[in-house]
Length: 489
Image 1 (cartoon, rainbow, N blue to C red):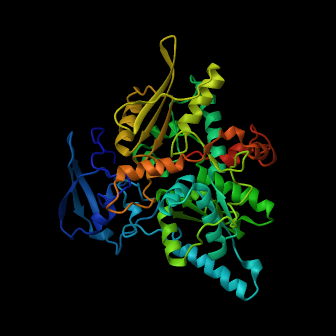
Image 2: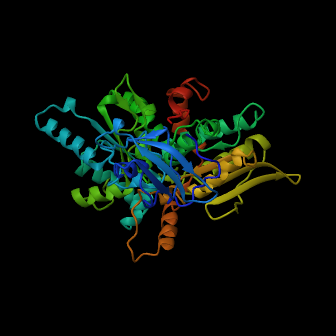
Image 3: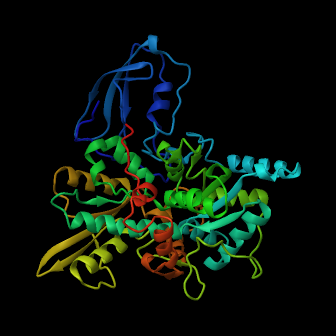
């Protein structure tokens, strides 16, 4: 059953706080009446004619919300309990950030504790060969949030994280996912330039696919129409999973299933991404990422288990996946706290296609601070246009432009959360006495306090292209780096 095209997202809260309940618990709460009319104030998806024990008789729509759906009770299909699986979830209103609404058993600190405890018991009975090699990969957005929380500089928080995870919790390796983002940005650059130079045969604009909340919405709301526009490049989290479970597993002589890979992310929806069947190898019985912890959950772990205050003798994050400058300082990418996809791809395309060096992008605010555009103009005509689009209200507008054939952009960096990944739902929230705007500015300053480097300048990435992937044009690129998003609805 499809909704009318006039329906708009009007009250979605963009993953920050739950503003509306999932459609399934709403249905579960209905009394066994012959008929019932529901008032829906947000957008919901009915992927079957019948929902639970109720058959949809009709939907009353208008140009404005709310709209109404009439349901008839069907006792023959009665079930005891309504359950929401990850494949059911649309990430539509923020309920995924609420542990009361959705429990993801394998994506929690309790599961992380269980693996740590099992390792401890195996060590006590001298069965070290059965222990999991636990690896933690930390995103730069989470690192910045934790540095701000503990009032530390980036290099200091790196040492604190490495020492605490290893010495207190028993983790074997602690890595930085900036390294994986190098791969993601380079492949995004290659993908876009390939499509742009063959635009008569390829679909434009390319929509960045690193945000699982946006992908979930795109797949299940817009389906096959929007899929051809999605970038086929994996997110940094999942590329890191490939690096750990394939390349690094071989380096330390471990099978993928012997490694328990944990990522620390700013977003609860990364749990959804890691849990997708697409990222699970049935043959090896191993997922790219076994557990996702949010920045807030890491703080809870440190509160419960303790942490090691930083000092100079503590080791740093582990190599080889550590992005360092020539002076041994941690580095990141240009383009803001969501990965810098538009920044890198746009500059690279301007350089490679038009042979123009562009040091700085001049962004123009379109609707609000979360909708910005940039353009390259030659002889008075825009020849290349890109946009940053954050938050579902802006996303809805850009999708409608694409559907009407009136989207002027060639490349769009899309993220579900307003403010992008730095403002993800899994980040620690300031206390009630803290000015939110001031906190956001300080977080961005902390994130940008490290040196910038182009991903192409990472010599180890170039080495892995050769040693791991048999060259940048190898078929293994498709095998290891790419993932074409599948329609789940």
